Amino acid sequence: MDEGENYAVKDLSLAGQGFLNIEYAESQMAALMKVKARFEREKPLKGLRIGMALHPSKETAVLVRTLAAGGAEVALCACNPLSTQDDVVAALSKEGVSVWAYKGESKEDYYKFLRKVIETKPHITIDDGCDLVSEIHRNYPQLIKDLIGGCEETTTGIIRLRAMEKDGALKYPIIAVNDNKTKHLFDNFYGTGQSTIDGILRATNILFAGKTVVVCGYGDCGKGVAMRAKGLGADVIVTEVNAFRALQAKYDGYRVMPIEDASREGDIFITVTGDKSVIRPAHMERMKDGAMLFNSGHFDAEIDIKGLNAIATKVRRIRPYLDEYTLKSGRKLYVGGEGRLINLVAAEGHPSAVMSTSFCGQSLAVEFLVKNRGRLKAGVITLPEQLDDEIAALQLEALGIFIDTLTEEQKKYLSEWQEGT
Image (cartoon, rainbow, N blue to C red; front, side, top):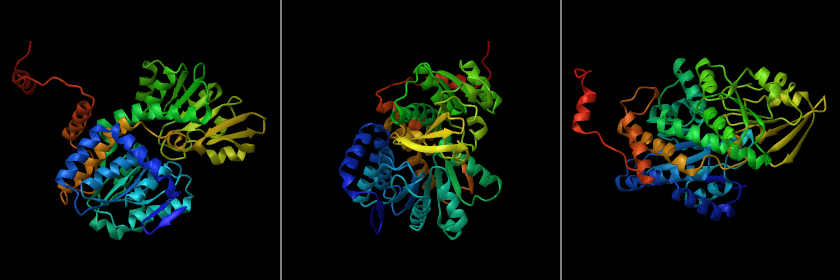
């Protein structure tokens, strides 16, 4: 590992490829580049320190550059031990960004790097999964008085933040960027759907056509995964605990059943729930010989890997990020990416184009926090709808798409109640 005063990365010699990958991502993220150009002119973040715990990908690098263009000093670490793109963080360190991350981090290094970011005394936090925020609250409460606010990227993080808010534990305002329509209805749906399949294919080269794919969870991510699996010719089963989402899955044309029943039928299992112990040893004991298990939820808690190790007689790695478990019965199960985010462990995460709208949301959320400094209460906050619409408009412009505008008569009709049949 190469280390300096403000960085720790796997190999600085990878920076050349990192610069090329970041440049390529920028070419796919036109909406975010428009935000960056405005930030360069206006410097809305001048003098601020921003601490980030995100997946250190080429797309995240473009976000870092955007915030830096606005005048901010940015410090970055990973929000997952296996999601770092080592060439990208090497390039960022060459640009003078404070960055501590490498792919395959130990738990010790993971938390050490979180603390490195926290010790830069950020004014604003950007988190993916809430580990940065929770670490500040647990061990650095003295920094909270100087925090303007934070932004949270993912569903799992929002779940944790709302639990903190309910307990009265959340002490500064956090914008739920994941609640933006231009985030969860695009990044989660289109991004997770495509990148999850991409990660599974890179890890296994398996044929989806004719397979039975069990998707655990039918939120925005699960919907995207199910749609892509079906498009590849799979028979899709959905498992859910939410009646409304289960009904949606049924009406979308999928079979719906409990995981206990699905465990006997599935060839490929994909968890996207944000919860823990979704697939447990009791389910694994029912699975077919050769069944494959993958996770695209944020944490590695959805598949009970510890429980699987307890019932296995032999474990071996047969491909990068694919482990074979032999059970006492002689049957074999395969786990991708050590039960972590398969789309980032075995692939590159979401395509740059879909991350453009997500990171427009992060950038504008940071600007919103600065503009409203001192006026926001501690708690989870949703961005105003007009900012979401602004992001959508930027992306439409980037795609060269034009839409209609309301006439004055139409505006008047929509604002009044008197005119009827």
